[in-house]
Image (tube, rainbow, N blue to C red; front, side):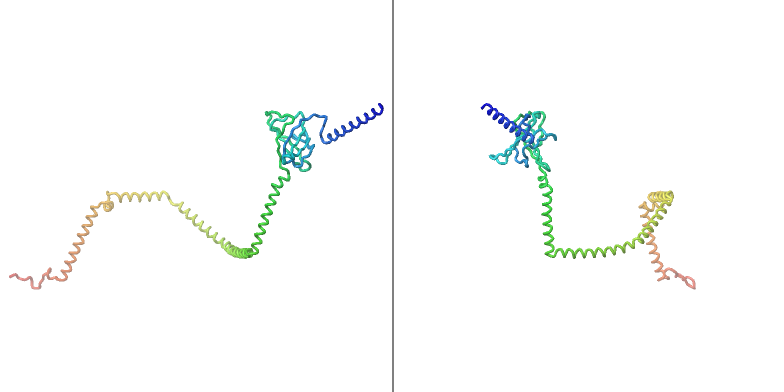
Length: 302
Protein backbone atom coordinates (compact mmCIF):
# COMPACT_ATOMS: atom_id res chain seq x y z
CA UNK A 1 0.00 0.00 0.00
CA UNK A 2 2.73 2.40 0.96
CA UNK A 3 4.59 1.64 -2.21
CA UNK A 4 1.50 2.29 -4.33
CA UNK A 5 0.78 5.57 -2.47
CA UNK A 6 4.31 6.78 -3.01
CA UNK A 7 4.09 5.97 -6.69
CA UNK A 8 0.77 7.81 -7.08
CA UNK A 9 2.16 10.80 -5.15
CA UNK A 10 5.15 10.96 -7.42
CA UNK A 11 2.94 10.77 -10.50
CA UNK A 12 0.70 13.52 -9.08
CA UNK A 13 3.64 15.76 -8.32
CA UNK A 14 5.05 15.18 -11.78
CA UNK A 15 1.70 16.09 -13.37
CA UNK A 16 1.36 19.25 -11.27
CA UNK A 17 4.92 20.25 -12.04
CA UNK A 18 4.40 19.59 -15.73
CA UNK A 19 1.19 21.65 -15.70
CA UNK A 20 2.94 24.49 -13.85
CA UNK A 21 5.79 24.43 -16.34
CA UNK A 22 3.30 24.39 -19.19
CA UNK A 23 1.42 27.40 -17.79
CA UNK A 24 4.66 29.25 -17.09
CA UNK A 25 6.03 28.44 -20.53
CA UNK A 26 2.80 29.50 -22.23
CA UNK A 27 2.78 32.82 -20.41
CA UNK A 28 6.47 33.24 -21.05
CA UNK A 29 5.85 32.79 -24.75
CA UNK A 30 3.18 35.46 -24.46
CA UNK A 31 5.69 37.72 -22.76
CA UNK A 32 4.30 37.26 -19.25
CA UNK A 33 6.92 36.38 -16.70
CA UNK A 34 5.08 34.92 -13.75
CA UNK A 35 8.27 34.95 -11.70
CA UNK A 36 8.76 38.70 -12.13
CA UNK A 37 6.63 41.13 -10.06
CA UNK A 38 4.72 43.88 -11.96
CA UNK A 39 2.35 46.78 -11.29
CA UNK A 40 -1.11 46.67 -12.78
CA UNK A 41 -2.80 49.74 -14.28
CA UNK A 42 -6.13 50.05 -16.08
CA UNK A 43 -7.23 52.09 -19.07
CA UNK A 44 -10.80 52.66 -20.32
CA UNK A 45 -10.91 52.81 -24.15
CA UNK A 46 -13.83 53.18 -26.55
CA UNK A 47 -11.88 51.86 -29.59
CA UNK A 48 -8.81 49.61 -29.48
CA UNK A 49 -8.20 49.06 -33.26
CA UNK A 50 -7.63 45.30 -32.88
CA UNK A 51 -5.37 45.44 -29.82
CA UNK A 52 -4.74 41.94 -28.42
CA UNK A 53 -3.39 40.46 -25.23
CA UNK A 54 0.40 40.43 -24.76
CA UNK A 55 0.76 43.48 -27.01
CA UNK A 56 3.83 45.48 -25.92
CA UNK A 57 3.63 48.69 -23.90
CA UNK A 58 6.30 51.13 -25.03
CA UNK A 59 7.88 54.20 -23.43
CA UNK A 60 10.36 56.24 -25.49
CA UNK A 61 10.68 53.27 -27.86
CA UNK A 62 11.50 50.80 -25.06
CA UNK A 63 9.18 48.02 -23.89
CA UNK A 64 8.25 48.55 -20.25
CA UNK A 65 5.35 46.14 -20.03
CA UNK A 66 2.57 44.39 -21.90
CA UNK A 67 -1.20 44.14 -22.18
CA UNK A 68 -2.23 41.53 -19.65
CA UNK A 69 -5.97 41.45 -20.24
CA UNK A 70 -8.73 42.99 -22.35
CA UNK A 71 -12.31 43.01 -21.10
CA UNK A 72 -15.30 44.34 -23.01
CA UNK A 73 -17.93 45.94 -20.78
CA UNK A 74 -21.09 44.23 -21.99
CA UNK A 75 -23.14 46.01 -19.34
CA UNK A 76 -21.78 49.34 -20.63
CA UNK A 77 -21.32 49.03 -24.43
CA UNK A 78 -18.71 51.24 -25.97
CA UNK A 79 -16.20 50.80 -23.15
CA UNK A 80 -13.26 48.37 -23.10
CA UNK A 81 -11.04 47.92 -20.05
CA UNK A 82 -7.36 47.24 -20.76
CA UNK A 83 -5.16 45.85 -17.98
CA UNK A 84 -1.46 46.73 -18.26
CA UNK A 85 1.41 44.96 -16.55
CA UNK A 86 4.27 47.43 -16.11
CA UNK A 87 7.74 47.13 -14.61
CA UNK A 88 7.77 47.94 -10.90
CA UNK A 89 10.68 50.33 -11.44
CA UNK A 90 8.45 52.55 -13.62
CA UNK A 91 6.75 55.31 -11.64
CA UNK A 92 3.79 56.98 -13.33
CA UNK A 93 2.78 60.52 -12.26
CA UNK A 94 -0.80 61.65 -12.39
CA UNK A 95 -1.88 62.77 -15.85
CA UNK A 96 -0.03 59.93 -17.60
CA UNK A 97 -1.69 58.63 -20.75
CA UNK A 98 -1.92 55.28 -22.50
CA UNK A 99 -2.12 55.85 -26.26
CA UNK A 100 -3.11 53.18 -28.78
CA UNK A 101 -1.05 53.56 -31.93
CA UNK A 102 -1.88 51.46 -34.96
CA UNK A 103 0.92 49.76 -36.85
CA UNK A 104 1.19 49.57 -40.62
CA UNK A 105 1.71 45.82 -40.34
CA UNK A 106 0.69 43.79 -37.29
CA UNK A 107 -1.23 44.59 -34.15
CA UNK A 108 -1.39 48.01 -32.47
CA UNK A 109 0.83 48.86 -29.53
CA UNK A 110 0.29 50.93 -26.40
CA UNK A 111 2.47 54.03 -26.02
CA UNK A 112 2.89 55.63 -22.59
CA UNK A 113 3.06 59.40 -22.22
CA UNK A 114 4.09 60.46 -18.74
CA UNK A 115 2.50 63.35 -16.89
CA UNK A 116 4.27 66.23 -15.19
CA UNK A 117 7.29 65.05 -13.15
CA UNK A 118 6.16 67.14 -10.17
CA UNK A 119 2.72 65.51 -10.07
CA UNK A 120 1.67 62.96 -7.50
CA UNK A 121 2.64 59.35 -8.35
CA UNK A 122 0.04 56.75 -9.20
CA UNK A 123 -0.09 53.42 -7.43
CA UNK A 124 -0.72 49.93 -8.76
CA UNK A 125 -4.39 49.52 -9.63
CA UNK A 126 -4.98 53.14 -10.67
CA UNK A 127 -6.50 54.13 -14.00
CA UNK A 128 -4.56 55.94 -16.71
CA UNK A 129 -5.97 58.44 -19.20
CA UNK A 130 -6.88 56.94 -22.58
CA UNK A 131 -6.00 58.35 -25.99
CA UNK A 132 -6.05 57.01 -29.54
CA UNK A 133 -3.94 58.16 -32.46
CA UNK A 134 -5.64 58.00 -35.87
CA UNK A 135 -4.56 54.96 -37.81
CA UNK A 136 -3.49 54.75 -41.43
CA UNK A 137 -7.00 53.95 -42.62
CA UNK A 138 -8.38 56.90 -40.67
CA UNK A 139 -5.84 59.20 -42.33
CA UNK A 140 -6.65 57.75 -45.73
CA UNK A 141 -10.36 58.10 -45.15
CA UNK A 142 -10.07 61.68 -43.92
CA UNK A 143 -7.39 62.68 -46.41
CA UNK A 144 -6.77 60.93 -49.70
CA UNK A 145 -10.08 59.07 -49.86
CA UNK A 146 -12.00 62.27 -49.11
CA UNK A 147 -10.09 64.09 -51.86
CA UNK A 148 -10.70 61.22 -54.30
CA UNK A 149 -14.40 61.21 -53.47
CA UNK A 150 -14.59 64.97 -53.96
CA UNK A 151 -12.73 64.62 -57.27
CA UNK A 152 -15.16 61.94 -58.44
CA UNK A 153 -18.12 64.17 -57.58
CA UNK A 154 -16.59 67.09 -59.51
CA UNK A 155 -15.86 64.78 -62.47
CA UNK A 156 -19.48 63.63 -62.50
CA UNK A 157 -20.65 67.24 -62.40
CA UNK A 158 -18.26 68.16 -65.23
CA UNK A 159 -19.45 65.26 -67.38
CA UNK A 160 -23.07 66.23 -66.73
CA UNK A 161 -22.30 69.82 -67.80
CA UNK A 162 -20.58 68.62 -70.99
CA UNK A 163 -23.52 66.38 -71.77
CA UNK A 164 -25.89 69.30 -71.30
CA UNK A 165 -23.81 71.48 -73.63
CA UNK A 166 -23.78 68.77 -76.28
CA UNK A 167 -27.52 68.23 -76.03
CA UNK A 168 -28.62 71.88 -76.31
CA UNK A 169 -26.16 72.81 -79.06
CA UNK A 170 -24.17 75.25 -76.96
CA UNK A 171 -20.97 73.34 -77.60
CA UNK A 172 -21.32 73.58 -81.39
CA UNK A 173 -22.10 77.29 -81.10
CA UNK A 174 -19.04 77.77 -78.92
CA UNK A 175 -16.87 75.91 -81.44
CA UNK A 176 -18.25 78.12 -84.24
CA UNK A 177 -17.46 81.23 -82.21
CA UNK A 178 -13.96 79.95 -81.53
CA UNK A 179 -13.42 79.28 -85.26
CA UNK A 180 -14.63 82.80 -86.13
CA UNK A 181 -12.37 84.30 -83.50
CA UNK A 182 -9.43 82.32 -84.89
CA UNK A 183 -10.07 83.70 -88.39
CA UNK A 184 -10.25 87.26 -87.06
CA UNK A 185 -7.02 86.73 -85.17
CA UNK A 186 -5.41 85.44 -88.37
CA UNK A 187 -6.51 88.54 -90.30
CA UNK A 188 -5.28 90.75 -87.50
CA UNK A 189 -1.93 88.96 -87.60
CA UNK A 190 -1.63 89.67 -91.35
CA UNK A 191 -2.36 93.37 -90.82
CA UNK A 192 0.11 93.47 -87.99
CA UNK A 193 2.79 91.94 -90.22
CA UNK A 194 2.13 94.62 -92.86
CA UNK A 195 2.43 97.30 -90.20
CA UNK A 196 5.69 95.78 -89.05
CA UNK A 197 7.00 96.07 -92.63
CA UNK A 198 6.45 99.84 -92.43
CA UNK A 199 8.15 100.04 -89.08
CA UNK A 200 11.72 100.55 -90.45
CA UNK A 201 10.69 103.66 -92.44
CA UNK A 202 8.89 105.04 -89.42
CA UNK A 203 12.00 104.45 -87.34
CA UNK A 204 14.08 106.23 -90.01
CA UNK A 205 11.76 109.25 -89.82
CA UNK A 206 11.96 109.24 -86.07
CA UNK A 207 15.75 109.07 -86.30
CA UNK A 208 15.77 112.06 -88.72
CA UNK A 209 13.52 114.07 -86.40
CA UNK A 210 15.81 113.21 -83.53
CA UNK A 211 18.80 114.46 -85.51
CA UNK A 212 16.99 117.73 -86.30
CA UNK A 213 16.07 118.19 -82.65
CA UNK A 214 19.69 117.53 -81.75
CA UNK A 215 20.88 120.15 -84.28
CA UNK A 216 18.36 122.67 -82.95
CA UNK A 217 19.58 121.96 -79.45
CA UNK A 218 23.15 122.50 -80.59
CA UNK A 219 22.22 125.88 -82.12
CA UNK A 220 20.43 126.89 -78.94
CA UNK A 221 23.51 125.96 -76.96
CA UNK A 222 25.62 128.12 -79.33
CA UNK A 223 23.61 131.29 -78.59
CA UNK A 224 25.75 133.92 -76.89
CA UNK A 225 24.15 134.14 -73.49
CA UNK A 226 26.13 137.30 -72.68
CA UNK A 227 24.76 139.06 -75.79
CA UNK A 228 21.27 137.95 -74.93
CA UNK A 229 21.64 139.26 -71.38
CA UNK A 230 23.00 142.57 -72.78
CA UNK A 231 20.00 142.92 -75.12
CA UNK A 232 17.59 142.18 -72.28
CA UNK A 233 19.34 144.80 -70.13
CA UNK A 234 18.99 147.40 -72.91
CA UNK A 235 15.28 146.56 -73.31
CA UNK A 236 14.87 146.95 -69.57
CA UNK A 237 16.55 150.40 -69.68
CA UNK A 238 14.30 151.50 -72.57
CA UNK A 239 11.25 150.36 -70.61
CA UNK A 240 12.40 152.31 -67.56
CA UNK A 241 12.92 155.45 -69.65
CA UNK A 242 9.48 155.10 -71.24
CA UNK A 243 7.98 154.83 -67.76
CA UNK A 244 9.98 157.85 -66.56
CA UNK A 245 9.00 161.59 -67.07
CA UNK A 246 12.50 162.97 -67.59
CA UNK A 247 12.45 162.52 -71.37
CA UNK A 248 10.19 163.45 -74.29
CA UNK A 249 8.79 159.98 -74.89
CA UNK A 250 8.21 159.49 -71.19
CA UNK A 251 6.41 162.84 -70.96
CA UNK A 252 4.38 162.01 -74.05
CA UNK A 253 3.35 158.62 -72.59
CA UNK A 254 2.94 159.59 -68.95
CA UNK A 255 2.05 163.37 -68.79
CA UNK A 256 -1.72 163.70 -69.12
CA UNK A 257 -1.62 167.52 -69.41
CA UNK A 258 0.72 167.31 -72.40
CA UNK A 259 -1.67 164.90 -74.02
CA UNK A 260 -4.60 167.25 -73.37
CA UNK A 261 -2.62 170.25 -74.81
CA UNK A 262 -1.72 168.30 -77.91
CA UNK A 263 -5.31 167.23 -78.30
CA UNK A 264 -6.49 170.87 -77.95
CA UNK A 265 -3.89 172.11 -80.41
CA UNK A 266 -4.91 169.43 -82.85
CA UNK A 267 -8.55 170.46 -82.47
CA UNK A 268 -7.68 174.18 -82.97
CA UNK A 269 -5.55 173.31 -85.97
CA UNK A 270 -8.45 171.41 -87.38
CA UNK A 271 -10.79 174.37 -86.82
CA UNK A 272 -8.34 176.75 -88.48
CA UNK A 273 -7.93 174.39 -91.41
CA UNK A 274 -11.69 174.23 -91.77
CA UNK A 275 -11.97 178.05 -91.73
CA UNK A 276 -9.16 178.39 -94.31
CA UNK A 277 -10.86 175.81 -96.48
CA UNK A 278 -14.17 177.71 -96.28
CA UNK A 279 -12.36 180.97 -97.09
CA UNK A 280 -10.76 179.45 -100.18
CA UNK A 281 -14.09 178.10 -101.36
CA UNK A 282 -15.74 181.53 -100.88
CA UNK A 283 -12.80 183.20 -102.62
CA UNK A 284 -13.20 180.85 -105.56
CA UNK A 285 -16.91 181.47 -105.73
CA UNK A 286 -16.81 185.27 -105.29
CA UNK A 287 -13.38 186.58 -106.13
CA UNK A 288 -14.67 190.09 -106.69
CA UNK A 289 -15.54 190.33 -103.06
CA UNK A 290 -11.90 190.15 -102.14
CA UNK A 291 -9.95 191.40 -105.20
CA UNK A 292 -10.64 194.79 -107.11
CA UNK A 293 -8.55 195.80 -110.10
CA UNK A 294 -9.21 197.98 -113.23
CA UNK A 295 -7.31 198.74 -116.38
CA UNK A 296 -8.16 202.43 -116.15
CA UNK A 297 -7.12 202.88 -112.62
CA UNK A 298 -9.13 203.04 -109.52
CA UNK A 299 -12.51 204.59 -109.47
CA UNK A 300 -12.76 208.15 -108.33
CA UNK A 301 -14.74 208.53 -105.38
CA UNK A 302 -17.48 211.06 -105.60
